[in-house]
Image 1: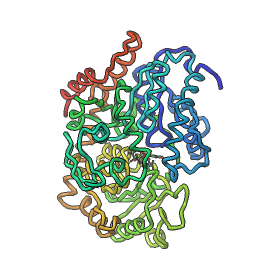
Image 2: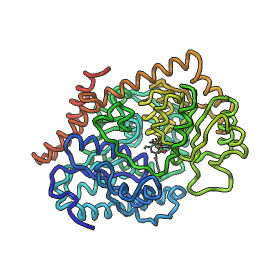
Image 3: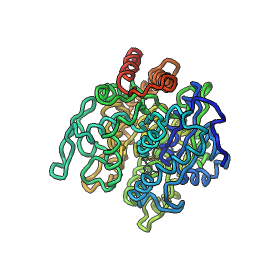
Length: 499
Ligand SMILES: O=c1ccn([C@@H]2O[C@H](COP(=O)(O)OP(=O)(O)O)[C@@H](O)[C@H]2O)c(=O)[nH]1
Ligand SMILES: O=C(O[C@@H]1O[C@H](CO)[C@@H](O)[C@H](O)[C@H]1O)c1cc(O)c(O)c(O)c1
């Protein structure tokens, strides 16, 4: 592999992302905002991401190495490409933590004539050990927090033991935190609950949040006007500077000035856009549970029945499971396609941001992944939340009680959802005074998101400050932590612009 990716130029930033699409794309979009301000950017992630990008036939080989001018670099997570990472999540995270640091370090040596040319490494939360690689080369490190700032605040307080959280002896306690509504156990991220089955995540987050001084800057994929109370609540602890939403520029009205940078790991079925165009305005229920969640057969059935009974046009993304199981998880009930052929469309993967901004789409039944939520906020449509794990329960709480742009499907006692409840939620967000109010609030948030990213908006200002600081940092060789004071300054500026 040729050396010197940096071609002798100064002002480089290396972004390092976990291999998921929903982790890489916000990083790439941050990269694009940085290049717009004169910084050279590359992104490193693991080989499995390259494999998935190449497998998605919509992406040619060149696009697996260069995305909108941002070079992609790959290192090994220590596992073979056909290893079932999803089923063996803890082993996967373990292997990544064990092999990632030395492989990333070798990648830096191989690709940069001198690591000193790197102004900074920017990591995301699932690869926190990047800060140790940065320290090895004496490069400052920043983190892009890719979930709501609320999650950052919850994890910070939980893992630094600043507030009480549910335990095995008190599993039902209500959690009270500054800047957030009271949270019951179904509103908390699954990784802080005593029954969480994935031990690797509490371990990873505990190490991350107890060693935050390794990060000179914490940036957030959110915007101040969306989460001001919880962002303010972190100012005295370890501030987070919102620089988002990091969604395609078309959703923000920025497509004239900014090219999108993103990768696809699955090929979109574009026929659904033609189908949407034939539907009446504001009539279609869009349903998707993202790239990872596979719903049990019973829940697939409940959604199918609700969609049939709601008698409204629908577009449902049913992504075939990567490792199918014999219990029918993630599969449509028999006969459903035939029964609903005149009512709706089912696709394996949709061009989601084009779908959400299509005038025919009325609402979105979602698992509440943060990327999907930001895309929906920027499209100004209401949501129906059916969260599964990780940040999603808290994201659902934010949708209903903080952003006030949607409703949540309440689970039955057995943990499943009933088709009647889903159908009722669809009606609530489609017709009547509540639907009207939700739509109004959603449209107002969309407008605020656009203002935040425009020149001089709160997020744009935070990016400008960040670039100013990483460049002046390298000139002055100043190693003092930047995270506290400057973030306060940034936040003050942002507050003045509150809309
Ligand atoms: O049919 C689909 C479903 C999802 N997505 C995209 O996949 C990402 C999903 O990220 P999110 O954080 O919402 O959930 P995850 O898939 O990571 O659980 C979002 O950018 C969606 O626009 C898509 O393009 N087509
Ligand atoms: O966390 C994983 O993916 C998603 O990331 C989003 C941004 O953090 C989040 O909002 C959403 O709820 C998550 O589903 C993820 C992805 C993956 O491929 C994997 O192997 C994981 O262990 C987690």
